[in-house]
Image 1 (cartoon, rainbow, N blue to C red):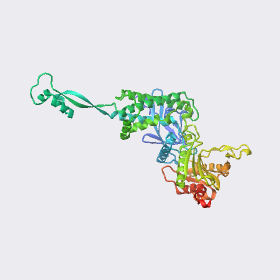
Image 2 (cartoon, helix red, strand yellow):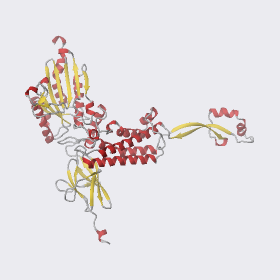
Image 3 (cartoon, helix red, strand yellow):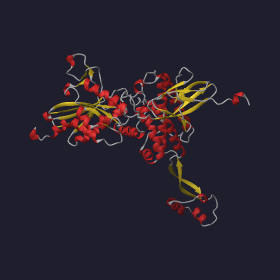
Image 4 (cartoon, rainbow, N blue to C red):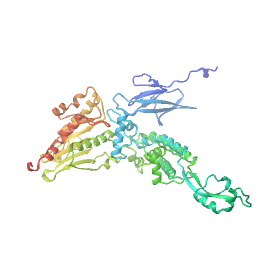
Length: 538
C-alpha cells in the first residue's frame, strides 16, 4: 500500500468564537445564527464558498463565516486543485428567536394588507431578534430560493399534463368500428352495402365502411399554453436580473462585487436549466398564451398546475422587477417587517376601540412599497364630527422630526438633538386640545434586549417636540413580540400609569393582550370622550 493511500482523509472543522469545534447532527455542522465561525479546510483548499458567496480568509489558512440573523440550511463548497467537496451547515436560531410560525403569520398578514410589501428574504424569511432587528431583504435573495421548487413543480406538470379532448369524424372499415353514435346509425340505414355486410350477405367491390366520431387527446390545452407563457416569462426575468446584477457596482447594501457576481451567475444558471428542461419536453411546440378563463379554472382546481402558477408569479411579479435602476430596486428599505406589521396591528386595535361612527382614511401607503423609501408619509386617520366638535386621530409611520437649528424654528415639529424618525406616532386631537405619543416597534425579546431598546423611548420623550400637538409626547411605548422572564415590570399597566412609558406586547398570529388594548385606549381616550359627549353638553 502506498503512503498516499495510507494517509488519513483531510478533516474539515468549524471553530466557534470560544475556540471549540462545533458538532454535527445528521451529517451537517450545527451552528447558531448571527455568530462568527472559522472554517479549517484541508491544506490544498484554494477557495471556499458559502451559498455561492466566496468566504474571506482569516490569515491563518482558514476561512471566516459570519452568519446573519437567518436560520436554515447552508452549503459550503471547498475548491481544491483537482476536486471540490461540499458540506452542509444547519443554522439554528439563537436563544431570543421567536418561532418560524409567528414570522410566517406576520408575512401573511402584511401580504393580505398590501400585496408585495413582504418580500421574505434571508432574515426576513424567518425573522431574527437582536440589536439590529431583521436583516435587510434583497429581492434577488428572495427569487433564487424559489427556483428549485419551480423546477420540481414544472416536472410534475410535464409528467402528468392536462389534456384536451377533440372530436373528429372519420370513415373507418366496418370491422374496425367499435361503437357507433346516433349520426352513424342514421347513416348506416342509408348505406345498403354496409347493411348487407352486417347481414352476412356477400358484397363486392370496396369493403363497407362506417363514419364514426373519434376522441383525440391533445396537449394543446389553454392551461398548457399558459404554462408555456409562465416559463418564458420566468426565463426572461432571470436573464434580466443576471444582466443588471452583472453591471451593478457593489455597495454596503449589495454586499460588494462578489455577492453581485455570484447572484448574477446563479440567475444565469437557473435560466439555462429551465431552457434545457423546456426544450426537451413535449410542451416545447406549444404557443405561449397568457391565462384565459379555461386556464384559470385548471389552476384553481388542479393542485399541480396551481402550485406552478403560484411559484412562477412570485418570480415574475412586479416586486422582483429590478428595472433600470438596480441600486434602487434591489434593496429593501431600512425599516423592518415587524415595524410595518405593528403599523398594521395598531391600526386594527384603534379601529376596534373606536367602533362605528368614525370615518377612516389612509394616504401615502405607496411609500411603503417603494423599495428605496423610508416609508415616511404613510398615514392613517380617523375622524368624527365637524367644526369645533371635530375629533381626529392620526397614526403616522416613520414621521420625521427635523433637527432644531434656531429657536425661531421651534414652532414646527422638531428634535432637540438631531433628526429622528420614530417608527409610529399617534396624534389625538379634539375640542379639548391635542396630544401625541411615540410607539417604537422593536423585534426583540428578553430582558437585556428590551432594556437596551428602552433607551429609544427615553430619547424620544426627551428630544421630540410637536408644538401643534401639545409639545412633548405624553407617553412612549416599545412594541415587542413577546415578554420574557425579567422584563415583566416594563409590561405592567401600573408602570405605564406611573411613568407614561413602558413596553406593550404585539405578536403576529395572536390576539392583542388586554394590557396593550388598555394602554392604546388610554392614549385615544380624549378623542373618544369628546366624540361621546351629548350635543346639548357641547
